Length: 223
View 1 (cartoon, rainbow, N blue to C red):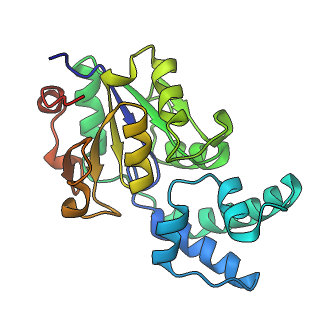
View 2: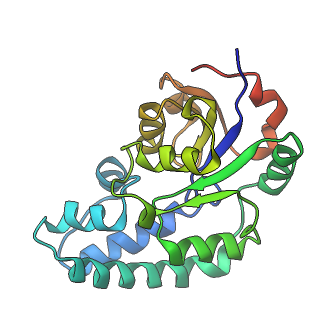
């Protein structure tokens, strides 16, 4: 059985535990517009979607590109203002990335975030040059659970999809990886280990990266 050749990381909820701040910003914005969603409803309907998909899902398909840009810009500015002072990586991330590179594993980020938030996070964590490829919402037409973002990352790495191991925190991301033919390690910032394990392409789940060792993961390949 072949080993993995690449690790592909989701960003929000996987490199950083920031999803509560994203959700807080979205719910406040929608409430201002007269639409009230719960956090559970947000997870069920909108997890993994791009900003454009989120706006159209909640406010209707009649929203123009200009409308979406205006709303998304407002939301992201609020998110960065409240999360920036508290930004920190998921525990053990830096060591895990260093060990992955030492093991010869290629690494990429595949996120539904746009360029500003990618720069905000990777720059804020000092990881701007830590990944061979970075794929964001601006690089694809379809958000998760569509597999496009993971397939694009694999292509940029020059690695077959089946040789990529994805690190994710959401159901939509797990499903996107499954459709791409990729196995998943779940970082349990949004899902518990018991919620993650029933997915057929999940090989393990962990609270953070301190309990994970790259060379050990290479031997757990399923697909």
